[in-house]
Image (tube, rainbow, N blue to C red; front, side):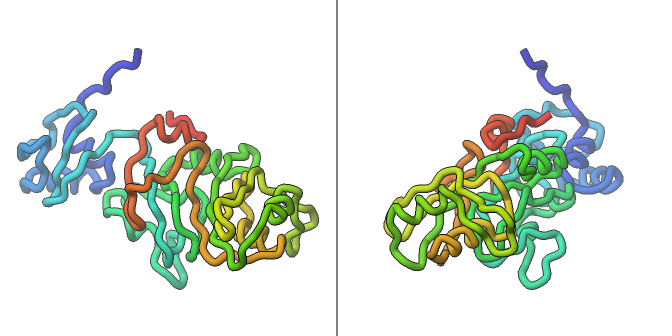
Amino acid sequence: MNKPARPLSIERILQNQGFGARKLCRILVRNGAVTVNGKRCEDPDETFATEGLVLEVEGVEGVWPFCNNAYILLNKPVGYECSRAPKHHPSVLSLLPDPLRARDVQPVGRLDVETTGLLLLTDDGQCIHVLTSPKHAVPKVYRATLAEPADQSLCDKLLAGVLLKDEEETIAADACKLLEPQILEMTITQGKYHQVRRMIAAAGNHVKALERTAIGDLHLSADLAPGEWQWLDAGSMLKAGWSPR
């Protein structure tokens, strides 16, 4: 049986959740900017049980799960770069609140500017390595809207393997099926540059729109609108192929 986490000072909780350095967190509390479970807290050293803790910091309320690392699922919209130093479009990190950006969360792999859907972000470097390394072969599921109607022959080509430009060996989909004549669902375990788009082009069609719908057994919720994000617990991360420490 897991032991319950020991209570922590509100200063430590705020610092852990990315609200700033220790000195700044103490100032936030002493200035009356923090309420805990609906009650204002003005003592930085007051301790609280962290499970289910409801914080309000400078008027922004949320349930902030206490964890050594942050695990976030974002429904990425069109027009955002998966980069901390974007060149032509805003970063997906701009969709997150300041405390999460302060924790230095990073995208787990990349979706191109025009691709939407499930994007994981975390400050856990080992998690990023495992979920993106070809060695671990974590499946990623994509739903592609095709430029032209297709039949089973397109799936057959993708499952057999296609040769991409500048590649020496063919690459195959791990799973592939047509949901509609112009809607293709494909699973891959690699992570090459624009891989799904390039594979479909090599098979004789083109992608008009692309959405990632799952990583491992972790699926994008229909209730999460583009641009919205949510915390992930250990059970969700296990579905994605990672066991939080």
